[in-house]
Image (cartoon, rainbow, N blue to C red; front, side, top):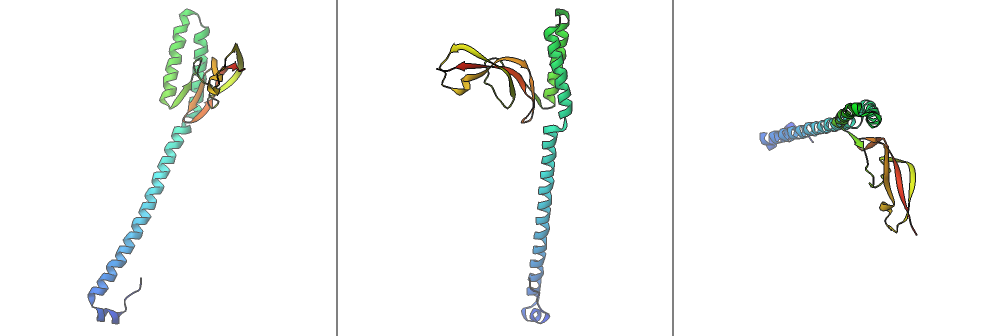
Length: 171
C-alpha cells in the first residue's frame, strides 16, 4: 500500500492518514489470522494422522500375539477332554474380548458365507458334486468349512481366515 506523503496528509487532512493506518492494521491482522488458520489446519491434520496411526497399527504386534494365543486356546478347547474344554473356551472368549477392545476383529466366516478374498484364504476347494445352475458368481464360491480364524485391524487384513471353499459346477 502506498504511503501518504506529509504534504498530501496536510492537504487531505488527518482523516486520510487515520484511514490509511486503519487499512494497514486491517491488512496486518488479516495476515496474522491467515497464518493462524494455516497453523490450526496443520495441527488438526497432525492430530488426525496420529489417530489414524494409533487405530491402524500401534497395537498391531500385541494384537498378532493375542490372536496367536486365541488360536491356540481355541484349538485346545476343541481337542481337550470335557473337564478342560470349558477352561480353554473361557480363555479364548477372554482373548476375543481383549482383541475386540483393541480394535481388532476376528474373521470367523460361517459355512455358506460368501468367500471374500480380502479377508479369507482358500486352502482347499471342494466341488459339491451336484450340478447347480446358479448363474450368480457370488453363489458359486461359498465357505464350506472354517479351518483357522483370521484377524482384521481397521481395514487391513492381518491374518487371513483359512477356509475350504465350496464350488458349484455349471452346465
